[in-house]
Amino acid sequence: MTPIKKVEIIVDSVELEKLKLILDKRGIKSYTIIKNIQGKGDRGVKSGDGLTDVFNNVYVMIACTDEEINLFVEDVRKILRKLGGICLITDAVWIKH
Image 1: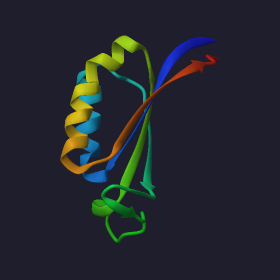
Image 2: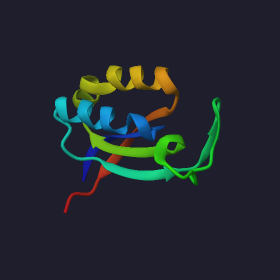
Image 3: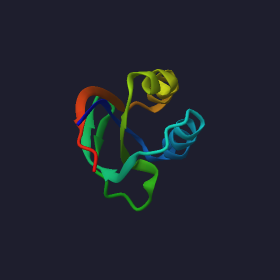
Image 4: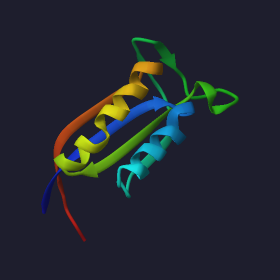
């Protein structure tokens, strides 16, 4: 088992390509994306059932080291300031296969 950081990011779907570009530029090679996330926050309700992706949220999960987080966290903060969202960083343990 390997200690890691688990990064969970929820942003507007219109920011997904920008977020993926940031992660790729910063050397983050692995992440998971789940689309059409529903929820309620300080900017209102996101139902996830719109006709287009414009009003939907996406969830991105990343498992990485502290050093890797420092490479992209400020770029993620800029995205969050623009349209809202959330970024959580927690300690986790990776069970490698």
